[in-house]
Length: 160
Image (cartoon, rainbow, N blue to C red; front, side, top):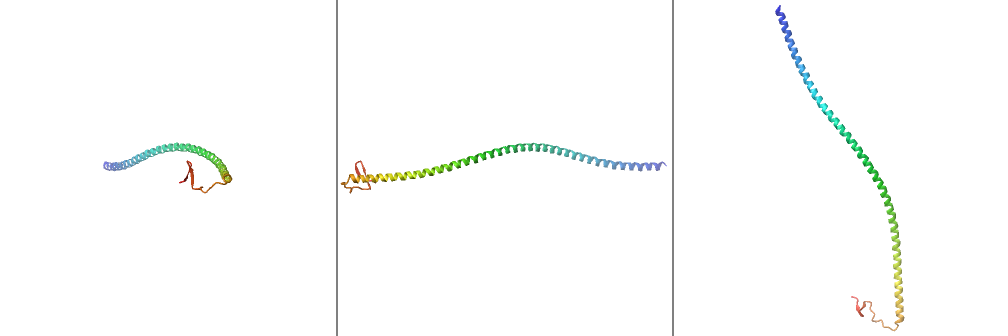
């Protein structure tokens, strides 16, 4: 009877070794998966830390952009004020230029009138001198008179 017990114990032992071997294989697989999971977890944790750092950097950039936006808004407001002031000054200058042009045109008209009067007075004076010359020099011979000659150093010379 011992033999059947030994045989059954051997079968049980073989079965236990086979199950132990299967269990060992399953434990190795679980350990390998655990290691992979741990590596994935470490990678995820590193990625999480990187994302946290990126979030912090983006928050700082948002603050910088907001500050820059405020600065630019102030500059835009200043430029708008300057533009309004410049437009006002331009209108003033255009009005002043229009007045100056009007005054210039009036002065040109006056100058033309004065030039005309001067020419008329010059002609009247010249004609008066000619009448007086005719009165005082009735007996004078004017045949030597030449429009293309001039007197220089008491000598009658060609103008050329």
